[in-house]
Image (cartoon, rainbow over all chains, first blue to last red; front, side, top):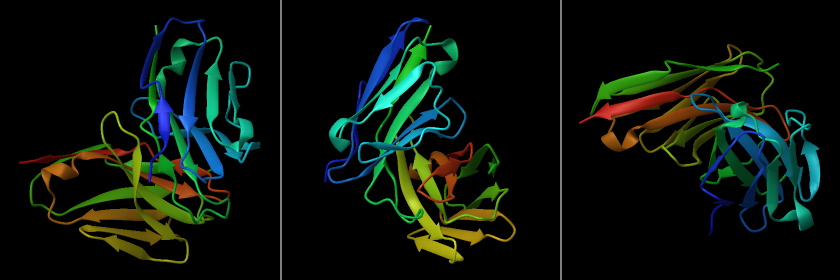
Length: 116
Length: 111
């Protein structure tokens, strides 16, 4: 079974530029998550999709971050314009069912973003 | 607001020792608690998931316990090996699979 695929693996940009990350979840997984992990901290949920609908985006900085999951499969996370504090690893995860927290999440390897 | 804390932030032990990693959380209304492993430059791998009604889970040399009333969990690693070196994260779920993570414990096993 293929895992969660993310690209690119690394990205270096200057502040005020824009950047996009792509995620392909495990086949058949209805729930998709984007997490931000700043160095030395645990991951923080940015947005959660159930199929192509948003379940939770309460911690997404909506003035600069946007995400979409067209057709309920692949997802794209965009930052525009980027700030220095956006430097982090962006992790995508998926799970098979939307129930009350009884399913394991499967994580991709992440995209490491450096904003200079 | 749920807060998850892991102590210590870093731990270094010689190979072969048994060790315990600690995790505490402030809100006991959780659905489950998970322990993850993260290797440098990699994503997270789920190690153990304990439902809120359970007290412990075991997988090989790993044993995780949960005391929901006191807001604590421990991850016990028996007979540590250099390959166990990684960052270990605990996370609690408060429904809808929304996980709140601790900051992790960076574990180094010295040969």
